[in-house]
Amino acid sequence: MARSKPMGLQWRSSTLFIVSTVGIGLFTDLFLYGLVVPVLPFLLKDRVHTPPEQIQNNVSGLLAAYAGASVLFSPVAGIIADRVPSRQPPFLAGLTALLGATLLFAFGQSLAVLVVARILQGLSAAVVWTIGLALVMDTVGPENLGKTIGSIFGFISIGELAAPVLGGVLYKKAGYGGVFGLGGGIIAVDFIMRLFIIEKKTAAKYESTPDDRADSGSDSDLEGSEPSESDPLISKKSEEEAYKVSPGSHPYLRKFPIAYVLKDPRLLVALLLAFVQATLLSSFDNTIPTVASSYFAFDSLKAGLLFIALVLPYLLLGPIAGWLVDRYGTKPAGVIGFGYLVPVLILLRVPHAGGTDQIVIFCAILALCGVGLAIIGSPSIVEASFVVQKYDKANPEFFGEQGPYAQLYGLNSMVFSAGLTLGPLLSGGVKESAGYGNANLVLAVLCLVTAVLSYVFVGGYPEWVRKRWRRRS
Image (cartoon, rainbow, N blue to C red):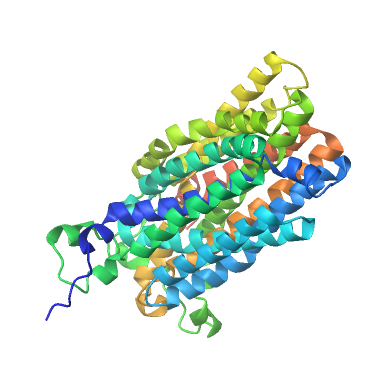
């Protein structure tokens, strides 16, 4: 006998609403993260009374505190999410830490309080990125993951774009109350949407329509969804054998089964892509406000406006880049995206202190960087999901009913947060010791190495490598 349906079951469990809720959750995280980025240098100066020579290091430390907390908590969030019956309760719980962080930022009067606020913000980010991406995977299936992630990232880039601008405006016009009052309002909207969500697997327990079943992508097959250079070489049977878990695997792996998949170089390089992407993003967040102040004597409002040049291309091109990943695979996006960023980052050595002409040059190069960030936005997650699903399909009893996807996204979030931690420390440290141009040169070298590794590992080994192996065998 069918159970009584919850009110609004059809729209609350629809793909559109679930994906929109995750998008709003990620938007909230990035919006509140970005809301204080252009304000931090001025907040440290005006409220905490930090000496000018210590502001850059303290900004880097606050950005790193956020990322460090996310690094530590992301694996825990993944394990919890794969073991609880529903992903909704921990998804809701993450907002508690975010609310606490917002209140501390609004009323904190010392550097220690601001550090605690950033740590709580990092805990919340670990939850929303880990469980949110697992919800997306459950809902749309891996064959639609690239374009969905691209669309979500395009949408949340609005938060990245608007937050620094609004943060600068509100800080200048309404003070701290205006900045963090807006943050509280966005948290309220996010909470309501998370409260109303009904997961696909929960909705399936009630009477469902054909459309409901068609929407669900949790059981979808990834075969053929990603063009992989290695797929035609081996039969389906031998391919499954290649992904089989060894019978004598350590009992520890059953508690954290995603650890077994870490032996696969494709997954390791996919995680590296996420790490480098985050390093780039946090480096921009760390250096743009201080460069704007030192090069162009910009205040918080004008420093925030510079982020438009960086994020607008990401907003416009993110969904297109994600669709191309679904259509042509992850290797082209990884190689082209990171390879393209090498010369563009080197170009950031060109701008220097000056007037309008230097501002225009700086904005133009930031826009070119935004194009590269759009290209590298989704291949990491799509590649990692592809590899893990291969293992999950070959070992359903080992990975459990829900699979290891929340653990995967917890691991991805941890690596991404590690990049967010390194970015401010690397860019801020090199900028202080060797200048802004050399800081970007270091990032360019990192992108070059990542592009080479993407060519070799992402999406399978290149054809010429496999031909050489066949001749040797």
